[in-house]
Length: 281
Image 1 (cartoon, rainbow, N blue to C red):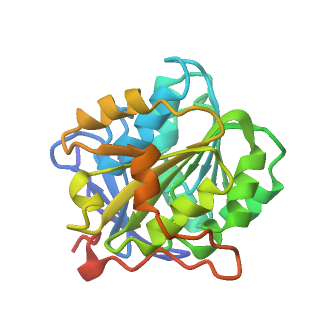
Image 2: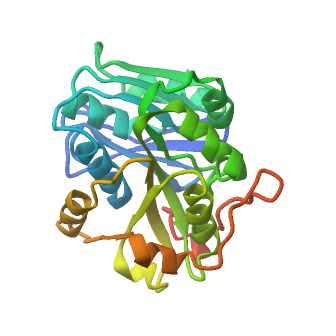
């Protein structure tokens, strides 16, 4: 049998590359313009290589009793890592994935196909427009993992966007987003302030060194109208290979002190990672 070889293809938003993992059969890393986008193990969709993906999965694991099917809306698709995880851990879930890059959708469908009957529907479109078109109270969880290159687009960071997400979620629903920033955290602090203006409950999941400003990195924001599963999230995050902390309550208020919500008129992209922090050669 031939060894898998990297697949390189021009897609709508850059050059995508699928690279096989030499340590795991049928596992692939997807990059776009050198920035890691997704890691998928076709034989074990519960294996999550990236720390931020593990933290997103912790939220999916704790927002409802184990195994209960959920209605999920994924903004940003990549190689469909989280949808595959949810299909494996919560069979029967109905999942809709919005991905802006049509050529990337085709590449993933060709080389990393989703099993039939997985309940995952992928459609091409802009995340904000698709969210605005969604019916009221149709999702249990919205997962936002949208990056243009290595930066979160500005139109997915505003107060108007947060209000739309709240409308689409069910009353007990959860919004969870993968964000990226570094000290002095102007972007991340503004996101906490923005979502706190719409949702009663918030927390951040990130490595302590990142939250102390020692490095640029990912932080997962969780927002809801109902009490968050902070204790369960804290246990799972602390047990990760790279342990993370769950910041909430007074600590999160102190972190975001002085930050103000941002509207569409003044929203900005997340900052450029310094020195290609997320790049692969």
